[in-house]
Amino acid sequence: MSLQRLVSKPAPLLPFLFTAYPEVKKTKVRLWLKHGAVHVNGTSTKRHDHALARGDKITIRPQKAPPDTSPLPPGLRILHEDGAVLVVEKPAGWLTIAKDSGKGRNIYSVLMDHVRSANPKLKVWIVHRLDRETSGLIVFAKTEGAKRTLQQHWQEFDKRYLAVVEGVPKEAKGTIRSYLDESNPMRVYSSAQSEDTREAVTHYQVLKQGQGRSLIQLTLETGRRHQIRVQLSDARCPVVGDPRYGAKTDPVGRLALHASHLSFRHPVDGSRMTFDSALPKDLAALLPK
Image (cartoon, rainbow, N blue to C red; front, side, top):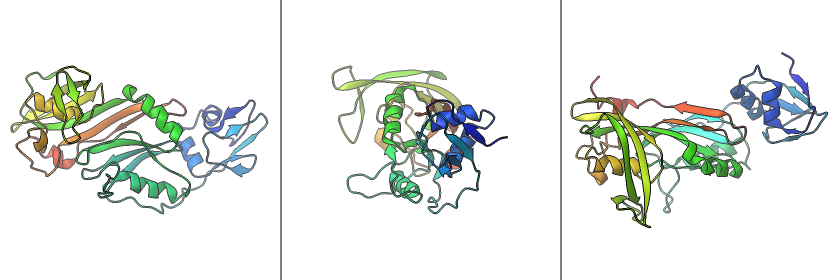
């Protein structure tokens, strides 16, 4: 494979690379950029949006990734990183970002340290949040433009969760629709449709049941605060470990809710990105084998 290409017409760097090297996986192309392997007219660049002009010479000089100078705390895993997006798998017990008091382990500060270990000018942006005691997949942006694009298309994300609940739903699969009042910062309520409520829609399917509990897969059509917890409580199947919304048991000392699947379009090149995270062992142990 020739690692040199000439630019025939103006284009941003990353889309040009995808087109110029169709035999190379997009993940590898992004790694070329991340580790400084892409040279434009002899100068290394890591900017995915670097503006190319006709006649520019692109040279790929693959090299080993530099050692990680900011190891992540145990339990946190970066599943994907490029110039625009970070996808992280988090354990329970971590805030997305510190509260007003500044207390609490939070992913935002860890990722800020991580990106700034490579470049002190880099930042991360919050795209969405997970409750402290919810584990699983969460997306951050590495540019303000990527953040805006991801949030503008948030309703188009395919978002799925796994929950271990008390009891068994009346139907093995279905859709829960309700209107949620989110005005109370401590607790969300279902209420009649009004100016103070927003519609919440959750599709669910029972995957396993036994020992007085059920494992449910939930696909969110909307993304309201505490949506899953409130609607399952209303269905008399509260999430295990969630006394705020009616749970009577807490066998593992945390909310039995896991963000298991995310699929969305990359904010820069539009490619489909899909990530899955298995049910953690502590939650799997709550169910019969």
